[in-house]
Length: 254
Image 1 (spheres, rainbow, N blue to C red):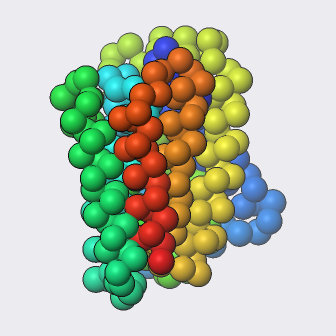
Image 2: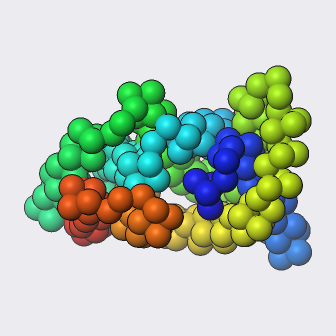
């Protein structure tokens, strides 16, 4: 949905505003806005990470095709996250997960070799680093007793100023133009963002950060299909790299 917008950065800021509001309203209605006082630094950390994520994602989508931007950010993010989750949360390493890491790496190498923009690649890698960091930060906040609705809504609320500042001096005009041109995509994206990430947080409460993120990264295949539907060429190279990333992620699940 963001890739279909002429200004993914501005549309992304509006999407985050909508997703934050939906999460907080749902949490208020369900009585799940608990935030222990000691957990506020963790909530603030997730907010900064989310801000970096959406800023770099919007810019990567401006410079790269959808399949490349999404595949690189998700794949590299998982490769960084997986060993960190093994070390910090004691997730098991076996032959299947190690094989998955190798296959995922090969898929990324093929994908990276074909990117048309080094600047876009840099933003995609920056997005990947935030992707590798936020499951760990969210996991610690959940373990500290923060309710998922409160955690996601507050994190996005804290991320929003960073996104708005990143829009530059024309931010008001860019936000107004994006809203007028892409209301259905922004509204639908906000709803999907809130619903999908809240499901992710509830899953994160009961399983490891590395494994649940690996399973979530099967979305690389869906992104490749959406890119093809939007008119991007689905070549043998891009198809095989997306398949390798997705299968490698599945193997990492164990």
